[in-house]
Length: 486
Ligand SMILES: Nc1ncnc2c1ncn2[C@@H]1O[C@H](COP(=O)(O)OP(=O)(O)O)[C@@H](O)[C@H]1O
Ligand SMILES: [Mg+2]
Image 1: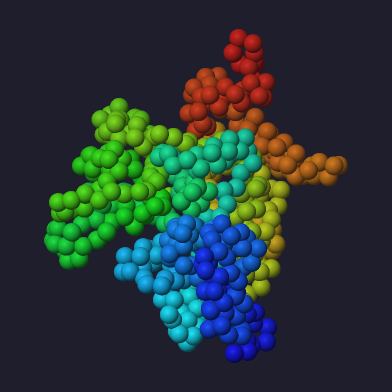
Image 2: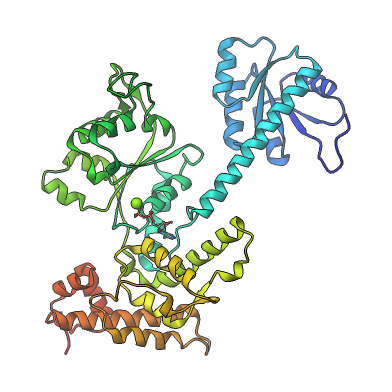
């Protein structure tokens, strides 16, 4: 068989302690295939580093373990088509091989036709797996799940923490206001961790009544309750070896809290209506925009469950506490919109704005963002439709109003600061200045409004008292004894 022009010959690796098996395979496949041989697992993994094989044939009776090699190959190259070979495969060994990722199991007495057909099937399967991965990556990127953007000090700290925590298997509790990126963070934890190749299952716990929630999470037997016509595996089993993200965990009813505590303690679930338990292997990440500690104090959330979930608590700061990230986020969001528009329509991407005028950016910087990054996305999407040029202007932005504590003048002065580009100043310098101007004006204004009380100013600004103190120090609004200078 001569391969079509431009189509490379399939590269096959045969892993067998007996060198004549590789020669036999080469003979059976004939021209049009490149066949290499490796005598053991170590050499096979080495070869795999050097050559992008299409198919690897693994002898199940390898002295150092055929099934183990199948598993290692699949971990090393998840899209690789691995086919098991055996002189006399038993049902048991065949099942073990398939379970660890072999695509097919062949007898060594296979005919040339059968072998070629099997290899072709395995290659098609590998190509499909690659295609699925590519599409999944594309969807992830389009949905912005790829990157968490942020350069502010709080975000840099957060990202460093995320990287460290991802590598562990610890249960994580993510706290933060709506739209701050809790779900994105949970996906990032999964993607950067050892379970990345396994499923990520996200579920909003506030979406279902307690009885249904239980069945959804833990599965149920056939006929466990009215309407349960078929048995369900439940999300914990769907997420096997992966990560389950339990969103709005603060909303789960006490009965489900009890069950969940058991899952966290015993690492096993009991499907609704079943009389047996099933052990599970999942990483658990939970999130809530509620003050979960306060719910514990109020007796609405089990304290023991709280501590099981909050092994590693991660607090995501609201956008108004990291305004420095706004220009970067805005650029990121606009670029993503433009990218999505390019791939999904034939229309010219020129209609999609990529930048903002200094006035528009000043408005974004001065706003208090109660809906956080989700609100920023919405505001920019609407503005992009309204604006008629390359740039989004201030009048295109439909903001609910300025921060209650921000005086109108701060907007204007931020705009002035933003015009100071050039003279060797980078955009970052200019934005830092603008943020500085806006924050200082808002802080001064809030302190005036609240008669100089940092606590009340904090409330007015919607930031923590500690942040108010820090900012007061930063902007020289305190004297030595902690009082505000006139
Ligand atoms: N750091 C970030 N960088 C880029 N986009 C972000 C970031 N944080 C959040 N987003 C985007 O903002 C939107 C809201 O995030 P999400 O994770 O759903 O928030 P939450 O779960 O806290 O309500 C999503 O579209 C998300 O992709
Ligand atoms: Mg959310």
